[in-house]
Amino acid sequence: VSDPAAFESRLEKRSEFRKQPVGRSRQGDFIKCVEQKTDTLGKRPMSRGFTKDKTLSSIFNIEMVKEKTAEEIKQIWQQYFAAKDTVYAVIPEEKFDLIWNRAQSCPTFLCALPRREGYEFFVGQWTGTELHFTALINIQTRGEAAASQLILYHYPELKEDKGIVLMTAEMDSTFLNVAEAQCIANQVQLFYATDRKETYGLVETFNLRPNEFKYMSVIAELEQSGIGAELKCAQNQDKT
Image (cartoon, rainbow, N blue to C red; front, top):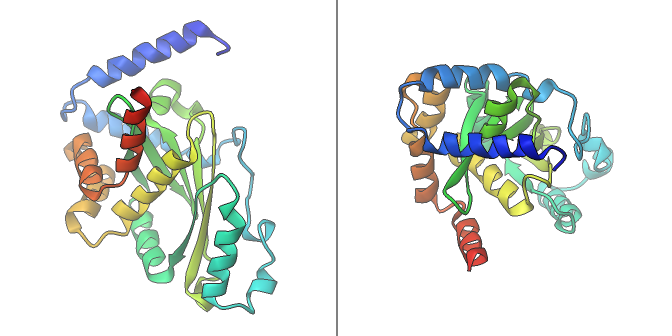
């Protein structure tokens, strides 16, 4: 750590934040502030480990795969990333369209990552087809200087012809490992691609009626879905 004092005060702030009640009193102001600050998430210079303008053609030859079926492309994508330490997916067109349409009206959301002691919240912000995440504590302490810690890149170039959207990610490995990044990525599907009105309702509340938003409802939804359960187990085993 370059500056131990700064790190100490960060830890204090973190435990202070943990002690704050999860009620609704200052919630509206707080979410407003989060929204203003996350607006700049995708527009800042990239922190280390991220590629600027990561295009699909920088990953593979689009012309070459146009001849292949959706199933073949899916296999190529999975084989390409299987050996790499990252998150990737092939999303069916209908599911992506649902996520994308919802992201237009609700571009910001909060998800929860299981940690040894409770949960850490991450704020997601859509910027075009990129979805940028940073820890909530990062926004609270660093404001507009808070850098993205995880970026999910969605590539809809083959959507019309093949009915699939390709996704991959980059993360700052000083903050997140692949299993943690995967847990966050799974929550995009959980909250934006759900058929349950109540689940997507949390995203709407966060964006449209922030005063009514309750953090704990995100954790309840996450625990009900089982996403992150393995992570929790692994962390509990680490403790022993």
